[in-house]
Length: 516
Image (cartoon, rainbow, N blue to C red; front, side, top):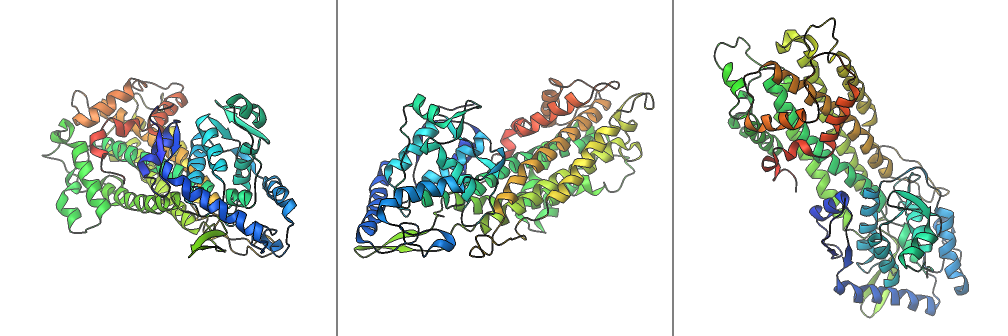
């Protein structure tokens, strides 16, 4: 998927909307013209330091524990090249093009703020490969989320050096061939440039943003499928009464309840059991949806705020600042990705809980004693197993997510001969969000199928207009489950609707204010 409108990057001013757009689709990127004088001044400051001859970490010294080793000027280019080659030690599956685009965008934005000392050539070359659709081949594993995402960002840097492989239109090819075909000259790194490129949190932040955007879709889909389950089980909408939520005061809960009220409004199924229903209260998985999903909403938005700050941040080391007429080099630790790790861990909690409560609703729907629907949601149960084992799949994935959700940020392991003695594990914490999101999308997909089946058993009564539209969209892809059939393709189709955001798109106007 691609878009044609050029994104003009203003360093330090990226928005979540722009980040979502880049995640969703490829398209042209340009850097705001006013960024270039600042970049040029920062690069000139590095050259002045080299010319003066004073030792400055990462400019004319070794790295990490070798920081005291002074490097001769005639070996500074070799120093930077060796840094990238030696640090390109990633392993595992390559990150997706969507994540790659975010990595490149954020690295360009960070370097362009003018505190990193790289030449405009470096930034322009990163923009050129982005616009040419040349995606660096970046293995997802090999970073501990401190001292920067060193290994994965080294693999990113190989691409502009013309070393190793890249991916173009989904196909792997040699970087030299891809650059040549696009008319892009490989760069030779100057003093500090290699270090500036590989220090930073852009990989962990990109993976966490991917998790954030998936969590947003899951939240919306879980609310839609949960509302459909409520009507399928002939549950009550009384727990969504605004007064209940206002006296508690939790903002996400209040907003979620308002959406649920609109989702189920004007349901003929609900109207059919307003009088004479012997049930006093619904199980928690129906009744407490605003409390659970609202809390998930709040922590997703908290993570979004942290990750937006990080997307605009300068996170390499050392940094160059102006002190009067002089430029000074300051060593710090902005590459430590603890904020990203915490954001990723809270996203993991939300993703796990969205799937967990969805699984409980599936369990309710297949239990005739609770739902009032045919056992396992199929006619002639016994001959047909219906949704019996589909629920087992949902249960397996919900339980798996509980284990995966264990926080990555509580772990640390010292590296670099104990110089880097406390790390964030943010890259793992963020990377595992995709697996969790895939699991939860399956669970919600199964719930969608189960709830739609329940709605069909209530015909000719109709659910609400919003939910009837969702039901119709599903039935265009998956027919009514009248008897046992090969079930996996149905689940994949429903999962696809969740992953692509089609459930919330069916009720789009309800979710316009859901995310910042």
